[in-house]
Amino acid sequence: MGAYKFFIIKNKEEVDFTLIQKELSEQLQFNFYHALREKHYKHIKPRIIIERLLTNEQGEIPSDYKIHCFNGKPMFIQLVSDRLTEHKVTTYDTKWQKIDLRSHRFSTDDEVSPPKSLNEMLALAEKLTEPFNYVRVDFYESNASVYFGELTFTPGGGFFSFTPPEMDRVWGDLLTL
Image 1 (cartoon, one colour):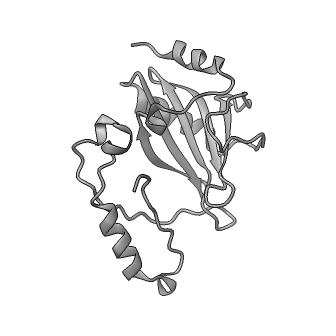
Image 2: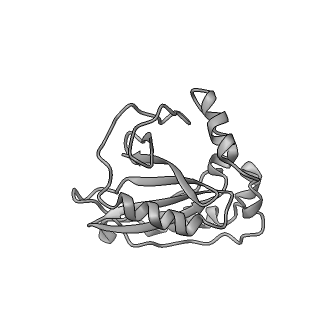
């Protein structure tokens, strides 16, 4: 086992909870520290988290806005869309200008309009990440509201490489240690 499993339940009447219970029981035996040696997972006791289902105007899972912040300043936004089907990732700057950055196999050339709440997301990201040298903060937009997802200190365990390679230097130069 490596990646965590999640279940999206739209109708409880159509779900085999016995199967879900079995899979979650197995999941609780896994320590994510052992997957990529991300030290902040080492002493966390595995738990099950149940969240309210968020949907967009079409009733689908909303896009994920991953804002990469350096020294408390938002710098890049990765839009993750169609996660359960095509899984697309497009990277923008904070003015919503697409930038040439591919970080893994899900990168796409698609361009979409910015979220209605982009300015709110950026302001919240700046406030949440102020004490950190680097952190990614994730948001969702659902029914004209912004929802916080998580803070991520080592996306992909720090193993994603950038294309073009010069983007490694761009990101590295933004980091002040």
